[in-house]
Image (cartoon, rainbow, N blue to C red; front, side, top):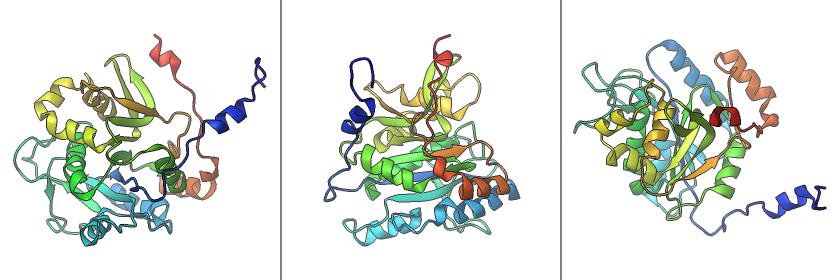
Length: 294
């Protein structure tokens, strides 16, 4: 009990969100898992990601290609809510790092040998900190309206997600179109150097309208001008999002982090955490006031 005699646990329960009406449109949440073909390590990592959190027997989670197939067959009877794709920059050496021309944004999956059907191949050069994220959100913003995607997420390939908690978060916290306006979220972080608030790159998301704004309303030149003085894609994304003149609704997941990041670089560690540590989620971190108040 607190000093006024109120039970804080009871108050928290009273404030607990209720899931959306089961008859309402289901929220669709695109997972973009950043990967690369630059060496065998990234290719192998995709294999054990598929074997762990992407292997759950839940028809609401599927490849992006399967989700598109369901929508094209009957948009009112789609089962999948969380389409996913590995995001790879696969353009030739003469392509820009940030898509800024009239060339196709993606390359056909059959353009190169050994391509995989759950990958999106962006028509840019590979550079994690220099345009890949904005090009991905440009892609997401472009397909969102046609395929009824409400939110678009970027996550690292060494991030380990509890899909059960992710589905609960979507059901309880994320409204679908047309109520998904200017929503941005993740584990909050702040850069004094760039004077920017953002979601840490391990896992952050935005509503499809913000993705379209970042990728299409801002030009590559605009994005370069707004970029952080040192190349950090997540801080840059915060600058891009908050350049919007309208209010931004930031969902801070520092106290409800349903993923793990750190100590997951090796296959052994990744699989071990998947098998032994997922029950410890969601993790409840602390706000980094010392970062903000210096």
